[in-house]
Length: 114
Length: 116
View 1 (cartoon, rainbow over the protein chains, first blue to last red):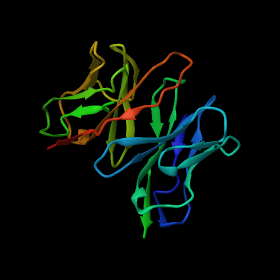
View 2: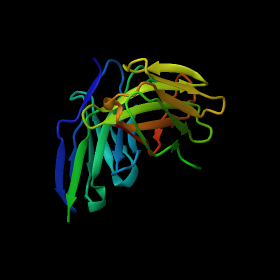
View 3: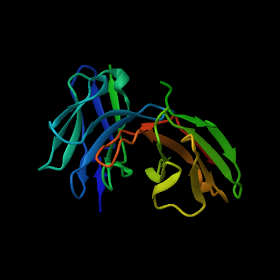
View 4: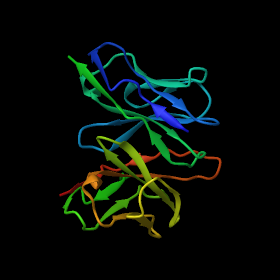
């Protein structure tokens, strides 16, 4: 079965420190991977995606993600965290080809303390 | 360019009633998908419409239905509401370029439905 896992329910980081939010996937064929962020009482905002090409993908708000095929991972990273980065982060994989629906991980709550 | 809009933003219904939610995609986007978000189940795919046709459907009972109009606006309907239908319903639109193209889904703010 195709799935996405976010092993951490919550990640706590001090402002200015690097952050990593983990994601692993299980799909058949080439994965289409996404990261979304959700702020309280808001919809999801697209951060970045991996389709093919460079393993390091750069996205919005200074975020980047590294695709690792051997480890089937797609971790979200940022060199220096901001308090305003505190939110719920979702990893997702598109199944059923390039126009299939998204399967989401359970989400990871990121808390950045000043 | 205006984003995805969803109406209403908040809704309170009682068990047994039915509800219709509306989604207007980004101009030019032809694909609309619906997702249900709950604390227990997380984000789950409901269905996707493209050019007025349902293209994909998630694992939800037949009480959940939808449609898409010629202007790409979409509605979803839930009949005989149950307490467990209380959720945030998110709509996403994407610009479908063709079989070889992958398109990013852009989400609306959601409709929060409370069933009493």
